[in-house]
Image (cartoon, rainbow over all chains, first blue to last red; front, side, top):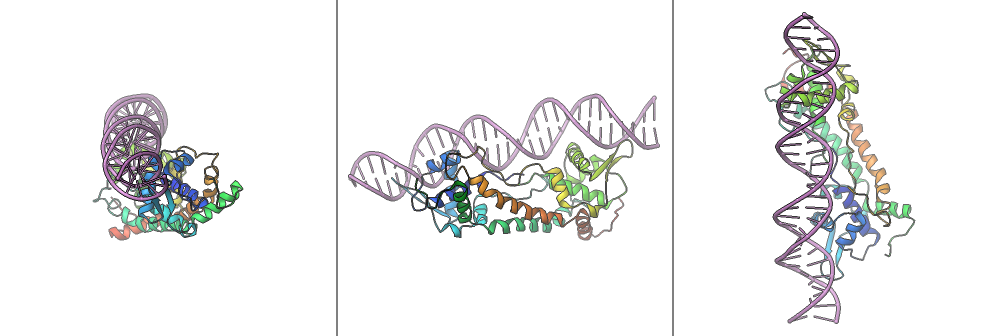
Length: 148
Length: 148
DNA sequence: AAGTATGTCATAGTGACAACGACACACAGA
DNA sequence: TCTGTGTGTCGTTGTCACTATGACATACTT
């Protein structure tokens, strides 16, 4: 089960905003960088706005902006803002409740799966958009803020 | 970012085999318990056989059996045997390589994502089918092995 | 030799996701 | 105030992975 592409693209968008902080970026520009459509970006920004990670400026010269410093945006915040499916899927149709195993398997698995998910989320909480932006700048050999 | 239902169903199947150890179970019986089709179970068993977790006995009175003791089958083994998609998806179409961000974002994210995945897998390595079977027996108030 | 169960193929249906076009609404600047 | 620009959202369409289902060759047990 793969995640949707939303998480990766959302991190991409936030990182782009972080490296060119101050200047609003249009959804169309962000779409170009992520190689996708502007509507996809707007859908992501809508979720990120709701989560308080970004804000949008309307009108001429407008675009998307970070709502707080990039080092205060953890990857787990991004993950929760844009992903809405459970990490572990269970049976499409509930298992046979009258069976000894079927009736209890989900409850028996639940603690282990919750712990696994929590371990993953803790790792995502340890990194911020600032960390990613710094790494991108290092790999790309440029400094932040980047003037386009 | 969900997994497929295969992981949950595979754990279900292996747990069923664990609690009734010794007697082979037909894919049709397992399908009934998991509330799915026999072909789905056979597809899972095919993968579990390849991974050395189960073996199948053909002919009358045949069925699936565990290939090793249930306490030697870790959940991570099951996960790797039946899941074949990456935990984290990336951009459907590769990002713009000529952009400062697009050209490096994937490489910059990769270490963090790998660490998050590893944390999750470590948790799955800490539990075995025997643990799940014991928990199912406790919840269902029966003892192992279960005579059907 | 007969019956039974697996393993695999081919087909079809379902759901999530993303690409795309269109348009109402809101703000900036002159 | 008026015009241009950009967001936010809707509906449609295409794609892909996954699951369900039927069918059949193969292999083993009795």
